Figure 1 (cartoon, helix red, strand yellow):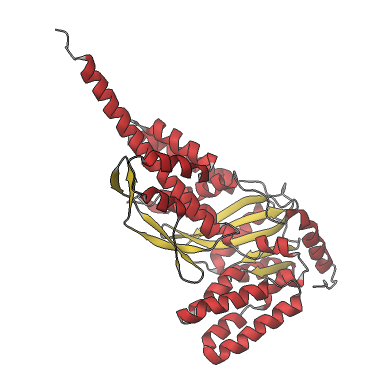
Figure 2 (cartoon, helix red, strand yellow; figure 1 turned 30 degrees about the horizontal axis):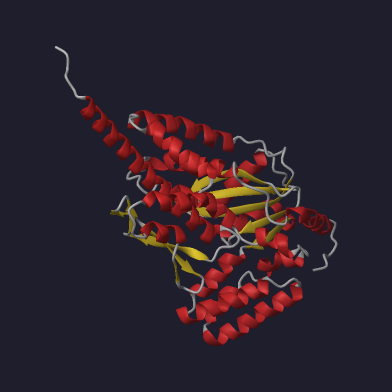
Length: 395
């Protein structure tokens, strides 16, 4: 017996299905827009602050108030920074799509296409088959990363840092070649950033082509395990630049809140100086001032002070120092993947975490641009060459 369904009923069902699909896609694109702006204001060279968690919030969509997380940002002075995209989506109106259309200009083409196409591909797809497909793909990414031939890369500088990801520590390495291009080199997993784990990563990089007889610039966060491993492997050939952002943060953490912004500014001003001697003098002045206010903060600044000025001592131009004075580029690839995995409730072992970490690093590499001041890389190369020949560099 034929099934009798009116054309009106079919049309209404189709409209409801398309409306639900459009609403879900719209909310996903809103999330991408807010996420993109948050990364820009906390991780780009023009960053104004740092991420400060999240709390329940809302946006307006099609005339209704809908639950939406408020991704918070704090300025370096400790003040709340309102994300323009989130504020736009909170405006009361009958058509949230207009706000979405305006804010989508701030979402990268890569995230836009992945958000929309991935959403449409996954609509109605079995969760288990998606999971199996990702496991195969992420294993391939991890294998590609850990078997990459480094002998073909003319590396000059290496960023190395321990990055916490889903309760596991990943010691990650990223290289910069003579043209200023960035390359993912590898990662090693461990419970802590100790010398054994860091040495294992260095040994693996050397096995794949890193030259232990060459003089490199290493940008580190100040961890003793990494520093000891580099000293053991490269000796005096390992020129170490301590992360200036980590140093400012560590010193500020010892101070009461009303003094933190002041000394951050003083340290930032010292690191912005061109002359090595003047920058060191300004930092030593900060140490003396801190000794009267907080001896622990003074000791934190004094520890490793010289290595925070390695680029100054090598005579590296200011534009190039901006890119090579902080380990922030190591954290950026993982910030986005943390956002996207926040709803994963169960992580099945360290292997899964390592596959996600490798996938995040390899995915980020596809969009990496040359470091700022790349045109002046020859200055750093010449400074390292002179140091190798035992010549002093005029700072």
